[in-house]
Length: 78
Image (tube, rainbow, N blue to C red; front, top):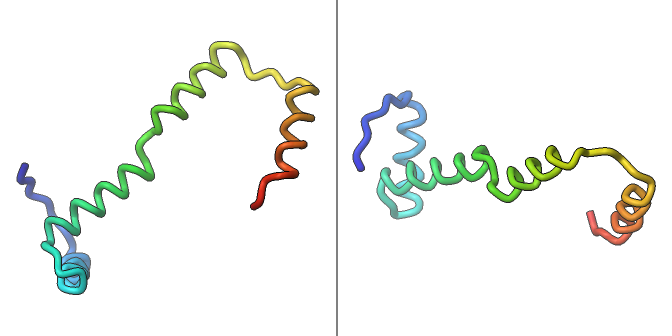
C-alpha cells in the first residue's frame, strides 16, 4: 500500500543516509521504523489478557504471593 506523509527535511536526509548505509530502499527503512514503533507502543495481547484477568478477579495483595515473588526475584539476574 502506498501512503503519502509529510516528513521534515532533516529526517528525510537521515533516512536517505541510512538507506545507503544498509543498501536498502527508503521504503524498507520506513517500514522497519514503523514496525519497531508499533512493537514498542501497541498493547501486547498477552499483557492485555493478563491485565483483564487481574481486573476480573481483583488485585488484592496477599502475604503468600508477596513472599513467593520475593523468593523468585532473589534468583533472577538483573
